[in-house]
Length: 420
Ligand code: SR1
Ligand code: MG
Image (cartoon, rainbow, N blue to C red; front, side, top):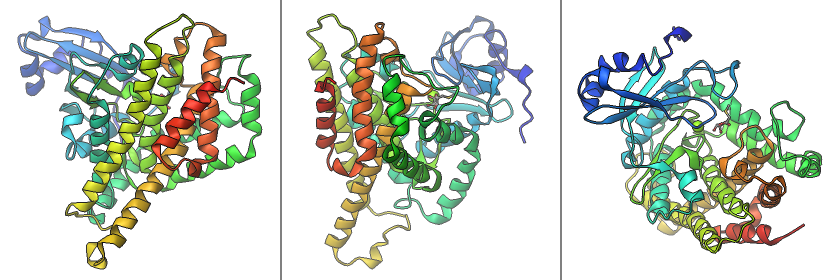
């Protein structure tokens, strides 16, 4: 049980004395707590996040309150999400610490997490919108995906150790229910949380809701999300959950962590890169850099998958502790290699479907994305959104038609050029 009471929510004034009692944090900040500066920096839907600066350094503090930031107390939400975020950072941190923020402190009673404050990092979504170049981004993301997903899967993790973690993370069911509802259900029928660019998308939304094949496809994906405990997922791996510099990439905000299908994380990431690609067409003024930025975005999509597949295959060939595909059964290396490729192809098909589902919900559901929201003209925004939806419905309904990452990016290019 959680004995947290809302009056213990910390703010700019109460955070410094609280943090001063934690030796590792106080040491990192340096000096006296009366001199520490606190600034709220959260830009997500769910939480407030504080950056705290001291003379020696800075930290980042996230305290989960018992409701959703954008809705206030009218939408209660478990503050235990901070615990699962912490546990996901710990579990993923065993395998890919270089791609995560360092955890400095977790207070289970206060639902509070302190991590290093990454600077001069920016949120990837913002950096990509501005057209910044991140030469190591795709490699880093592939490294993160392999580290976090392969190494928490049954290929690498013995069942005797993995099953208790599956049980532990299934406690994060209030958070996963948000995804179950928002991605797979409520956007396909009338629901008070849904919104879209209206009236421009009204007919499209009505068509989506009448499309039985689409609803069957999304229902099948929901079953995957509900029942498949392949690996420990980030659970909300969009470009707002990634901090970057030219040389560094870190993944944060693991509060939706759960065991689930690997393609859910991969597909979500690809979805947001693709939304970024389509959203570049929003501003109607001539922009000589636009084509370059779009080319680079699709290159990242291709390189993330290629790097992930390569890293996955390499990890599969290493000595492994997992119970899946025991080597003792396979004298013939070719048979095992064939299985490895079949397994990867299955992850790709899942990723394609989840990618489509994520794109759709970011346009006609509750949680929209900044790069589309920023397009001032409703008509211009709707044009980009129609292209996103055209691609996404195709991915969702025909995941097997996309057999390679190049097929997927070609489908994006085609959707962008189709005008109707
Ligand atoms: C109330 S939470 C709405 C959405 O924001 C988060 O980023 C998650 O994607 C969630 O679905
Ligand atoms: Mg988030």
